[in-house]
Length: 460
Image (tube, rainbow, N blue to C red; front, top):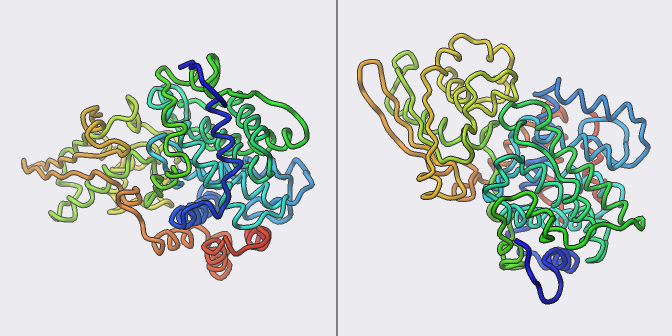
């Protein structure tokens, strides 16, 4: 992908865009969407504390042991810590329950690293709500654009939430620190140089998956602060012959990096989740439960559920023996079986007890999944599902679900997103405080100092 470029490099042009763009330049629909994404991500972090206690305790205990002075909040914790420590901890919590946003063109969950970065650093800098929104949108744009350039072959080995998310978060951190284009380019360069996070975690559902956006956020704060302190970093790294895009993609395409820059924002094609599970499970379980409800089927009657899905990567979501609640949330057979057992998919049902449940395991053996490249090509940027339910007496009920609830083509309403936040946050904040935080985040542009919002996000 090495190119001869007249004038500034591609990385430089992207950095100049980030440097010159302000909140007032952003379309109102983009800023409104950003507030919903921020609200949703904070809710996911608080929900992670309540519903994934063991995994969250590993990172919160580490954070507490650092005895790091600072001004940044770990959501749900008393006291303050350093920006890098808060970024690490909040990033892990936000992604632990796999309920956070999805940008399908890059197959990333960007809110976790971006909220962790901007809130941790924003408290330290006493940033305004407008500055937080501005940095969030621009970081999302950088990550989404780079993702388009590196996909789909990037996904063969890498977890894009870690790789693209870390670079976008570094751009957001540099923006909050008010670095110029040169500083932003070097922060992007350090993040690209340090990018990592393998798809092993997606396939197996271990704690490294939660650490991916955590490390992305932590490194983003660190790199931007280093550049702000006078350090230097790589320039032109995205398109360099041995740079990020050539190293992390078999077929890099630089065209999307600057396409319609400032006219189109990647957050506009981001979606939020209505189910606490891997994105590829959503259309399958939604259509399965719809067919069961429409035809009054009992799970005992079902001989087989046959699912044909858009292929994202061979084997994606096809774990028939998940070993942890996190792995279960990444397993289409488990999610569909849980839906058949309960009639719904609820976060609190992903437990060790359900992993061992004989009925769940029996149902999983009846779930057949086939990945389809033709379906992926026909419906890009979604995981479409064709579902056939075959009964023991020979009947067949069929349907298709192209867009999951929450997809940009099938959006959740602001009211539904707020309800999701309250449901996730109430265990940690209590009802009154959760309501107030939701109101504050939905009016984030009015905050003169982010700390007026985060003061309610500590321990009750």
